[in-house]
Length: 146
Image (cartoon, rainbow, N blue to C red; front, side, top):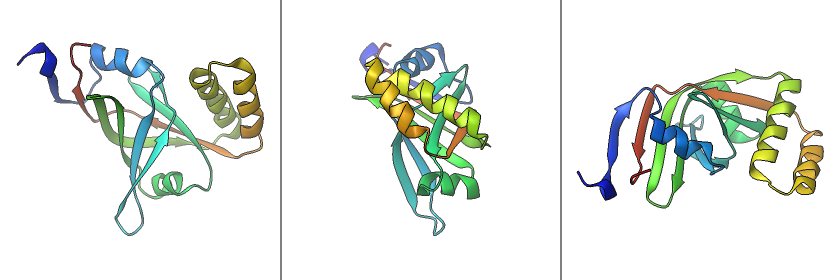
């Protein structure tokens, strides 16, 4: 296997390389299952807390509703041909205070302009938020020498 085509086998934990890759503010694609069994994908912000992927949404969207019904999820974070795919079941935290704290943290992580982040946080404050925590049960990574 060459360094330019390095892949890691599926495992239940994040490798050091995967953790470094996920620490940067990349976008994640969350895949859930609709009630009819069809897949639904959404692009989300996330944060890494140890090996736990933390993400958040406005209550009422379809993908969080799907996770309320079926907690199984797949998240893929990609940058070109490099990616980390994480699967498992989420824990759901509906605490409104925590939901606002998580979305504020995410806004600051992804929006480097402080005024823009503050404006987004103010808009999010009007929403009911739900937080999801994913502890991986399967991780697959393809990282070219990272």
